[in-house]
Length: 227
Image 1 (spheres, rainbow, N blue to C red):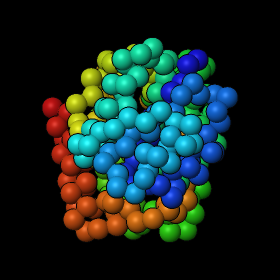
Image 2 (image 1 turned 60 degrees about the horizontal axis):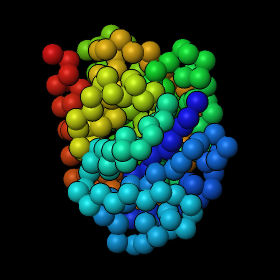
Image 3 (image 1 turned 90 degrees about the vertical axis):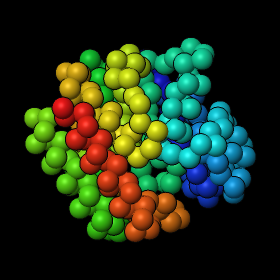
C-alpha cells in the first residue's frame, strides 16, 4: 500500500521538523509539505528535513491541501493520502492506527478522533471543544452517522478522494470530506488518537475572529451538503 503524507504549513518552522521526525518513514513513500505563504523559513526547514515542498501562496487550509494533492496527481498517485498538521499537536507515530482499517479493507476514510483518545491538558481550548462537539452532533443529526471529531489527522484512499470531489478551499475542508464520504456511502471509521499542546499560537483558535470565522464555515459546509 503506497502512502503519501500531505502537511499544510503556515509559519511552522519551529514545529515542522519535529513532526517530520516522528513520521514512520518505512510506511510512507513521500512527505509533501505545502508552504501556504510562510515568512519564517518553513519551506527551507521542510526541505532540510527531506520533504518535498510545494508552494501555495493563496491562503486557506483547503487551498494548501489541494496544492498537495495536485502535486501527487501530476506524478504517480498513492493508494492512500494521509493528512497531518504541522504544529506538532498530533502524534505522527500513531499513523499505523489510521492506516490499519484501510489496509484490512474495512474503511475508505479514517479520521483520528481526539475526543476518543488521550488529550494533554490544554491541548484543545474550550472554544475548540465546544465548536467541535456542536459540529459532530450536527453531522450525526443530519446525516445519520455518529461522529466524534472533525480533526485534521486522517487517511483516505485515493480513489475515494476522487469520488468525493473536494471543492472547499478554506476551513470547511475536513467537514466537507466527512459529510460527502457519508453521503456517498463510503466506509467511514474513527480511531482514537492522542493530542498535545501545539507549538506556537493557533491561527484559528488563538483569535476570536479566527474561531468565529472557522466555526461559521464548518457549520455552513455541514448544512450545504445535507440537502
